[in-house]
Length: 475
Image 1 (cartoon, rainbow, N blue to C red):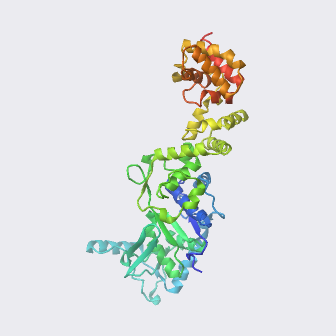
Image 2: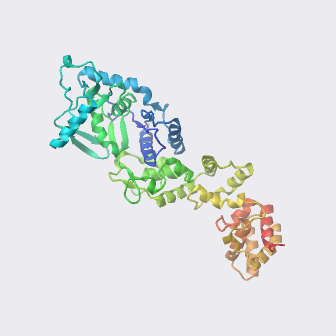
Image 3: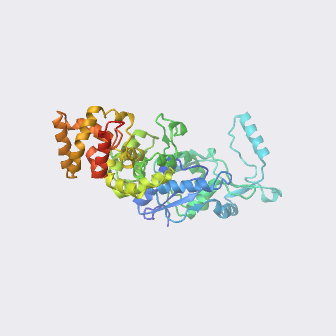
């Protein structure tokens, strides 16, 4: 049965190289593969392309797995190591040699360079044409050789791409690429095809910087008589200036966005929307993304990374999150940035305050800033901005409020009535007391509403903080 027939179960893969961290572009590629597999009830596989032994590190491999786990992109089966499959890749190269679809080439590096130099001078194509392509095996020397594929030299090759449409390349632009080096090691281009075939991959969804590779990889599929998977080459992510996303645009690694305190759900939503659309939906849940995602929603032009949009979506996801799940993610965030774990008391306080903290916070640092009142200890030292609200008149009113609050029923409407009554007695509007109360309770100008804070802190702590602030400094 054809791997790519309509009724075959979908198998996608993400194949990062562990020579660096998980880039934000790689994270989006993984996300598109994961979404497509989950949307179609298929399988999402992970392959670590670790053939560059010098630059592939265990630390980078772990960072990639951690990044995917943080983003909630669960893969099926154990991750596959490409390097561990080198014998299988070499076996395919030798099979192509036996079939006559590949040949032994004994040309040395010097001979290849001389060929290219002569071609440059004559104004011809510098693609190497091996003199061994049609040589009689009887003339083969006892010398090191590479195995090259026998590429078609006339006509054209067309790839039917699910995103780019039909893309055609003249075969005169394809060389007889090396499959197996003279030391017997396989090249990356061969390894990718063999791995994708053996893993049963039906859809190859990857960055469009791989589009030219697809033509060379198709040579191997065709020579082996294997079904070519559906190709979908997605445009790269650009910075706001329209240039390829890089360090000069700010953070480029998934781990950096985690450390900046963006929630995974907001990140998934934003990256899904970056280059893919469903009508004009901007904010959507994971379930909606899975229901809607398909390859025909992917655009052909590069998507521009917009931090404001990311923050806006993250704010919506924080506000919509389940309180307990949000608390769990906050604890993961603190661990990821190397901050001390929450104490039992802090966790309880955050759990009680969460409904008041999560509105209008676009990131976890913003949420913690609003939660400052929970972690502050008496006596509260207001910052410069908040201290401005505590003039002698305000302090006097707070001193007057203290005994009334001590006796009040500790419910929101009762507390509002007490504060409103005191404000009225001084010819003030309720809002005029919000600043001094906020300074007394939180020591900051950014916090939840004063009544929310009083309910979360409880009677004893709230009254004590307001009494402290009602005392003239130095008394």
